[in-house]
Length: 232
Image (cartoon, rainbow, N blue to C red; front, side):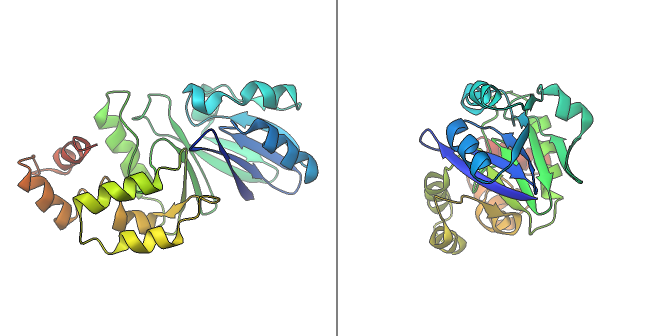
């Protein structure tokens, strides 16, 4: 399967996952460009889904539905089924609550479409208020192979790399990541996240030291998670 990223609004990112003939739109806010791509590549849009139900992620659903014969997967459907079959392949669907209670992430091959759960260089804000569930969601993602490519719901790269540079002025990996940053194809690998993203590096000695200097709890992994999230 292949993945095509579509940018819309100022920083939202939506996706088309497709095989030889069949496609799935995820957070399809760029509905017109998505339909145009589908037509020019002789694809059939079979499913429409979302990573969560915030309006900026669901805004394209109506246009996609009116411009195709696709089935809209009600948000609880992929979460309950835990997979979506597309042609002869399967996308795994992980329930990743934290940013919202209904957040899900889609995983196939070496790709993770993470919505607002994890960005490139940061994690999402915990609008649900459930930090413990968010912690478990991040732990689940961190178990994926390091070569997994993280495709987020927004392009916040420059803003978040600025945050990391202020937090860790000596982090040499930030400049390397910014050198390869392409606004037309925004992603990172989990390997890169373990170097640039302080919000998943709560077991890193440097991050623990930074938290201690701020007088924040660091005795347990979950305390370190809560402490780093307090800097969000």
